[in-house]
Length: 153
Image 1 (tube, rainbow, N blue to C red):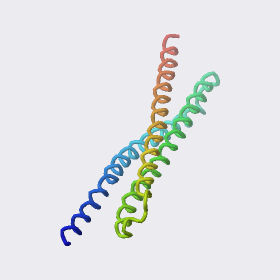
Image 2 (cartoon, rainbow, N blue to C red; image 1 turned 90 degrees about the vertical axis):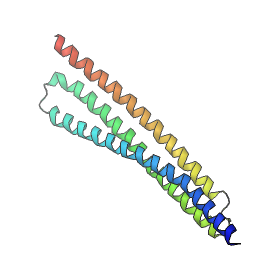
Image 3 (cartoon, rainbow, N blue to C red; image 1 turned 120 degrees about the horizontal axis):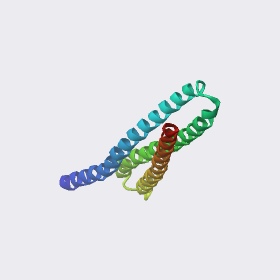
Image 4 (cartoon, rainbow, N blue to C red; image 1 turned 180 degrees about the vertical axis):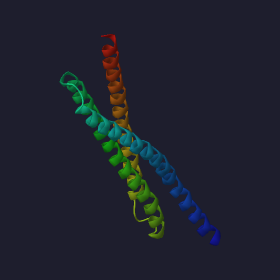
């Protein structure tokens, strides 16, 4: 009897490890996304400070840069929100697995549903970050083209 009870406890703990791994992966992606957001915000602040000192003919280019960086910031923000929700779903999965064991497994599909929602949110956040990275490279290409064109004149 004691061996069976211990086996159940170990099975529950083993089941709780999987969400912990997803929590770690999500947290790592969240740190990266927050760093990206900080860099975009810093770049926006620099562009805004420089805008006033620009000649009128250069302001259109700066306006376009500011608009692109604003879009980037909003994309990363959406990704961060989804990652925070995903993190919550994985923590909820781990907790419901433990609570379900104490409730004699009466929660049905709730732990699985939370895990699936967490994974879907993680996928969604990855897609938002993919869009942001693409916009970042596009923005860099446009800035580089603009600088090269100015040096050729």
